[in-house]
Image (tube, rainbow, N blue to C red; front, side, top):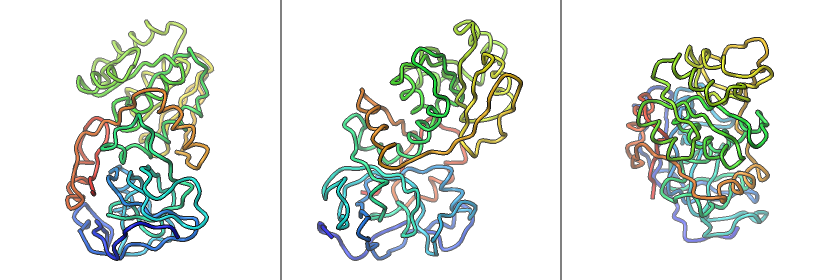
Length: 323
């Protein structure tokens, strides 16, 4: 191993049982040891997402987990130790990670071990303070755009555009040369996606008929694709603006599942990670300033409060600050 100055013990927000936000407590644990193909990350910040709530409830628990469980699927930080086989990063590098599997615990901790293949150097275009809330949603948004496979100049409607995945999808879609109609939540959401470069920004809380009419006005031939970060009646109405042969893509977990209709292909997807996808994501990010919008930040000791906030409405993401 190649390592820096690492303590033997660390602070971590842990689960000793499954349940509501109250089961998350701050504990002192040993710093995890790494294998030859792993990296030890000194965590600066960790994203808080609905997938973490599913882990807390016991419905989406990574294989190999055992109590006490440290939740957290994504983070940004500094490489503290690398295994003998690791060549993609070096000690001291500022990186981000989406921990696809994490049998040694997640990122609600001062240190975390992860496979090096899930780690990438942080591009200059991402603000360091918000980077921990980027990886899962950015990679998932990129997977959704891959599923749609739209050519430059096509019209894309993003539903739920001011949410965690949606506001990153707006930026990635623009980098792919797409025309973006962003349907966001409320005036604050509309302002966010407008700032991020959406060609048309519409309030999904408004009159659905008026929103649909506006979509048809800007894309009279029909939208070529829909990226749906949420389901429901409004989305089902808006799919009327898809052209025949258009595609609607949505990430697994969206409820209710988007309705199918004749002439429209509906596809579900998961976020993909790994060295190739991380390189692609970084190339898109490096094309210009890239904003990770954080609605609220919590210190590690208030992780339970962050999980309560998950149950409310907000633009962008929630973040734990660890260092």
